[in-house]
Amino acid sequence: MLKLPVYLDYNATTPVDPRVLETMLPYFSEYFGNAASRTHAYGWEADEAVEYARSQAAQLVGAEVKELIFTSGATEAVNLAIKGVLEMYASKGNHVVTCATEHKAVLDTCKHAEKNGASVTYLPVNNEGLIDLQQLEAAITGETVLIAIMYANNETGVVQPIAEIGAIARRHGVLFFTDATQAVGKIPVDVNRDNIDILAFSAHKFYGPKGVGGLFVRRKNPRVKITAQLDGGGHERGIRSGTLNVPGIVGLGKACELCRLEMEEDSRQVRILRDKLEEALLQLPDTFLNGSPEQRLPHVCNISFSNVESSVLMMGFGKNIAVSSGSACTSATMEPSYVLKALGLSDEMAYSSLRFSLGRFTTEEQVNYAIDQVKQGISQLRIPLNH
Image 1: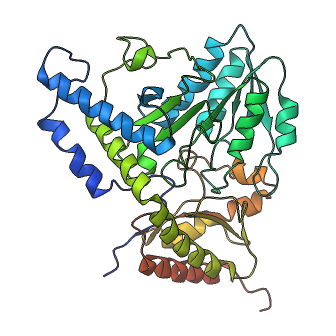
Image 2 (image 1 turned 90 degrees about the vertical axis):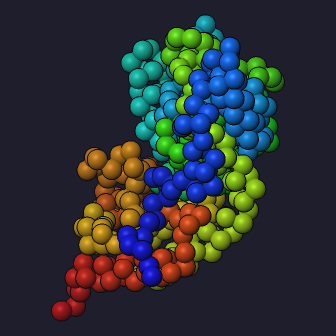
Image 3 (image 1 turned 60 degrees about the vertical axis):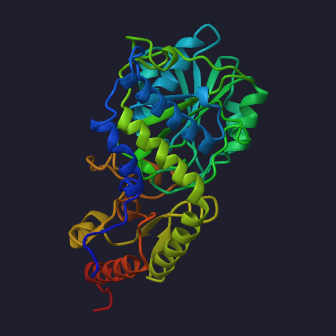
């Protein structure tokens, strides 16, 4: 029996994997110690669990254990990275190079930095959503301290040429930060292969709990320093104070381990289902794929259905299918997606776009149902012109 509504919004958040939940449960009641309590067994157990989770997370992204800082999620990690670098390297310069299609967490943090005197270059993207590496290199000045380019886009799934961007940053002695929230756990991410200096991620995007994430901060070649944005207690090596969310961190660690072991198979399965969904929907007339068809995540497709408003379409099957017209963080605004506008779409086409994101628990039956529902919705909303 098909359970409704069918969930196809995995980029917004994912269900917690039952194996992750099972690992977390004892840390709410049995092993409830504060990881900063150094004088008794309850604190030692909690601290040990945190450090084990840190090693699980480090393995997933190819980092050293001591290079990972736990945060409340990717938004905090992004703020810590950008503000922390600008503060720490203020004597070197205050210029940041970023991209027009970044997540609001990055764009709003950059806007905040501009109010405080920083200068920010927002690189455009081409119609596939990719930045131009020559433009990136040309934007670097003697004042540039940070390049902030996301790994994979949350609306289109487009994956930027991260290793090349990192190589450019290295050549110019500039730090490279990537918001890898949509990439970690979905595709292989390796901070050394990709020349990444700072990386943000969030557990709830890969079957872990909400409210916990992390920041990778490189320790050598180059050694990166960032100024803390939260003071009090000097937790997380003085970079991020605050009592650690032990159950959440344990869940994050387990989710990282499962992704590391199962990513290849997960990707293979989800790509087959995504391609089936996409091929069926693109057979409809006046329907277009947004973003690069090749350089993208295996589980996402963003499709425009011309002459149909996505909000009306979603209302039509709102109770039966959970999809989105863009980022969960901007769905409260009625503006057309700035990401799709940056790809060159008109307001009308941006308003007629839906993002489908599949995941570990998506079934073929769900995809078949979604295809039928969308096709039905489109045929009802498109008025035949030859009547």
